[in-house]
Length: 123
Image 1 (spheres, rainbow, N blue to C red):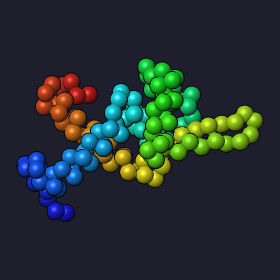
Image 2 (image 1 turned 45 degrees about the vertical axis):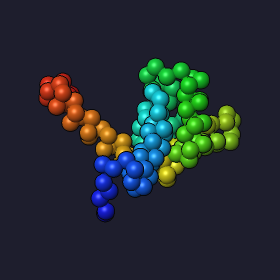
Image 3 (image 1 turned 60 degrees about the vertical axis):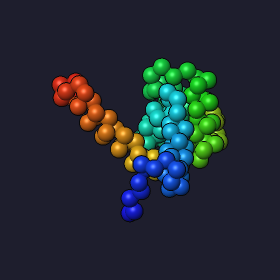
Image 4 (image 1 turned 90 degrees about the horizontal axis):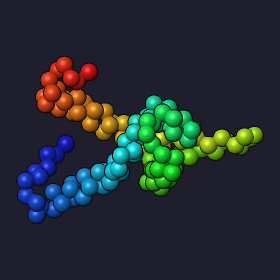
């Protein structure tokens, strides 16, 4: 893997990488997207399960965020016909690629908390 130097802001590789980072940050923007994706990393979930499990999220906000994640190809909305109709959400194959990034962010965050607060506050 080629190492890219991010020191020179005018460098075209740097500009491409910064745009890619901006795109990534946009995917995780807002308070709830990361929580939704993290829950769906574990298993397929229905709307009501997400609403119950994600503490503090409002129904309208959850609906909006799910639509945005679906529009970006990260989740799939699955409708099961029958009585009653069941709607559930699952990560797409593309969305599953975020698990590595989420795990890396969690690992870095734990190290950061330990550095800032000390080992006793990390748990």
